[in-house]
Amino acid sequence: MIGVFHPGTSLVHRTPALAKLGLLAVLVTAVALVPSLAWLGAASVVVVLLFVLARVPFALAWRQVVPILWVLAFAVPVQVLFGGWEAAAIMAVRLVIAVALAALYTLTTPVSATLDAMQALLRPFRRWIDPDRIGLALALTIRCVPLLADLVREVMEARKARGAEGSILALAVPVIVRALRTAEHLGEALTARGFDD
Image 1: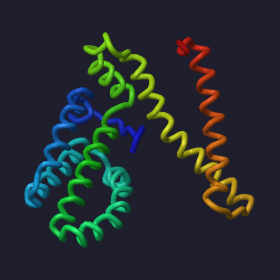
Image 2: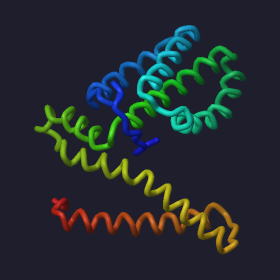
Image 3: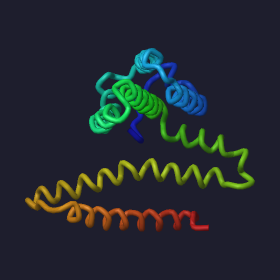
Image 4: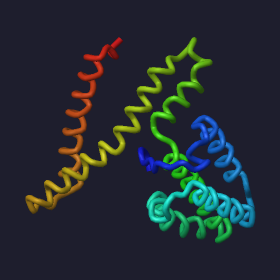
């Protein structure tokens, strides 16, 4: 989900990132507090309407939600066992709505707009923290998540090409080594640009 941006001109796309962050926080908090399946059903309809309003293609929206379904495939039976089917359904719908709302935010908001919004939020606390440095850290985090996924994919493809099948350790070691090497190069680049103080 992180770093995926679907360009558009919809009202959702044009809403300022700071306002969307605030709405995201309010909506996710409200969904977490709603104890009724009926209200959660209504909230689900609102989320679907927001995706329609943003003109996000169904296939793209679906790809954002699918990962949480794998988690729910394990979590729901456990919740049914210990809390009953209604508690399991409420938990599942809450999670899907929260993930869908977060996905809608990332699909309709460029990373640069998010960073600007975070810096604007932190500016009143400039006396204690450096908003620009936190913005840079956030940007690096957002960039490094897909970068790490690419490293894992490349190592797996290299192992497959060599016909090597092994343990998780055999996968983890080259990924960690390459990740550390990439982090070292990134650190050198930041130092060269004066970010070492």
